[in-house]
Amino acid sequence: MSSFKIFFFSALLAASFSASAADFNSDVNVAWGNGRGKILNNGQLLTLTLDKSSGSGFQSKAEYLFGKIDMQIKLVPGNSAGTVTTFYLKSEGSTWDEIDFEFLGNMSGDPYTLHTNVYTQGKGEKEQQFHLWFDPTANFHTYSILWNPQRIIWTVDNTPIREFKNSEPLGVLFPKSKPMRMYASLWNADDWATRGGLVKTDWSKAPFVASYRHIKCDGCAHANGRSSCSSTRPTSNWYTQQMDSTSQARLRWVQKNYMIYNYCTDSKRFPQGIPRECATTA
Image 1: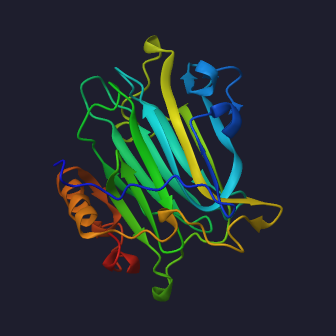
Image 2 (image 1 turned 60 degrees about the horizontal axis):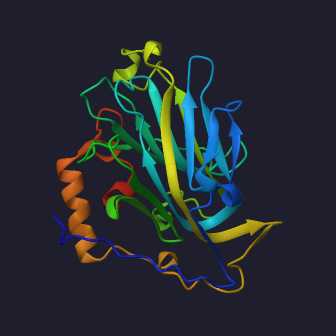
C-alpha cells in the first residue's frame, strides 16, 4: 500500500497566506471546559478531558477562507462508548458552513467510527462514515482538511478518504464565502454516538482524555472583512490541488474496504433520488 501517496504539501511562507505549525500557545485558545483543556510541553501538546461534569474544547485564534489544516490526534483508549472527539472547521451564524471530522467512540475491542460531513448555509446531510485501518488510540495519526474553491479533501496520514467537489453548476451548495475557524472538542454524546445511543458512557472509566499535537494551519487568514489571499493567490499547493491518479486509486481503496456509510447510496433516505452531487463526489 505504500506506493499510494497523496501529494505532499509545500510549507512555503508568503505574504498572501498564513502558515503556522506545532504551537498551540500561539494558534489556539482553550474555549471551554473549566480547566479540562490543557496546553503542555511548551505549546507542543494539548489534551482534552471529559468527565461526568463536562467535556472540553479549543479553537483557532484565526479564521480562514480556504486553507489546509493538519492535526495529529490520539483518541480516547479503552471503552470510549458515548464519547465524541472532534476536529472541524465552522463559520459563525445560524446559516453556518462546516467541514467535520468526528470520531465516535465504542466499547473496548470495537473500532471507532470516523464520521465526516459538510454543511453549507446550515444544510448538511452529506455524511460518510469509515472505520480506520489502524488503532487510532495507540499512537498519534495525522488528520487533515484541505479546503479550496474547487474541492474539500479529507485525509488520514496523507491518505485521502473523501473528496467533496464544488458542484455549483448543478445547483449544489458549496462553502466558499464564509470564513471558518478550526475547532476541536471532546464531549459526551451517548444519546446517539454509539449504536444510535443504545450504548451509554461508562463513567467509571472517566476521565477520558484525547491528545492533540503538531497543529499546522496553512490558509488564507480572514480578518476585518478581508482575506489575506484577496490580492495575491497563495503559492502553496493546497489552493489549486486536485486528486491525481495515485490519490484517486488510494481513495477508492479506502472507500471499498473501510467505508461503512455513504449518503450517496442511501436510497431509503432519499427515495426521490440521490443528491445531485453524488454523480461527481467520491
